Length: 75
Image (cartoon, rainbow, N blue to C red; front, side, top):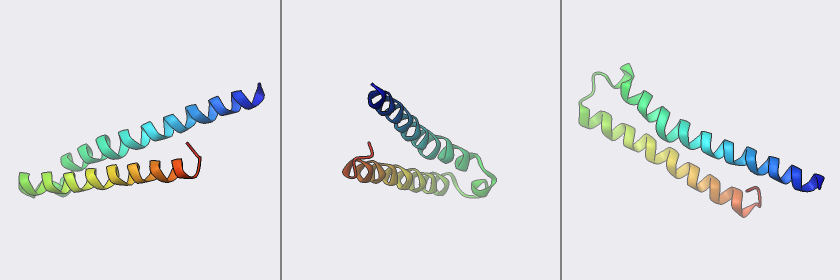
């Protein structure tokens, strides 16, 4: 019974970490970057391009991280 409880807690924590990663790095960070003063002087097309590259990079890293974690039995 204790092993089942530990597995449930580990699964819940893994889900929370995965969810937070994708929310922070593929939603919040690109949104904040788009609104930041760093891109205020750039044209809309350049700013959108930079944000798309940032979003795509973090999304790709997240997917690769999930594949890596699955291969090692972490999730």
